[in-house]
Length: 88
Image 1: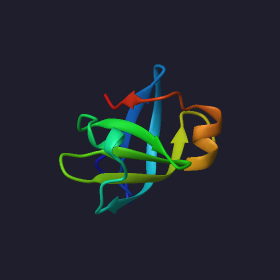
Image 2: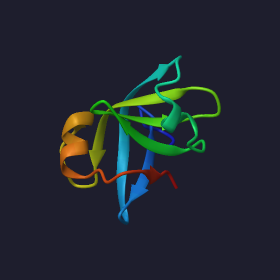
Image 3: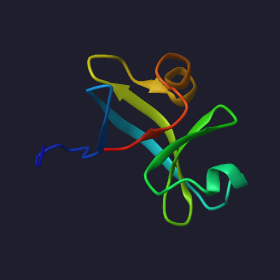
């Protein structure tokens, strides 16, 4: 881990590790329903997934589920996502 040329983040979902490959900060509030989410909550909005932070959102562009290929956010939503997930 400490010697990885590309350190990164991951979360656990359904007892499997999901690596966060690519993200970008979104400097706006996406809608009032999502704005009431607690920091760390993963929300789906307009075919994209975001992590709520204290003030803004982190858009998840690409992820890699354990033992699988890298997926775009749309592919992840189609195959894995259900309502809201809280990062562990």
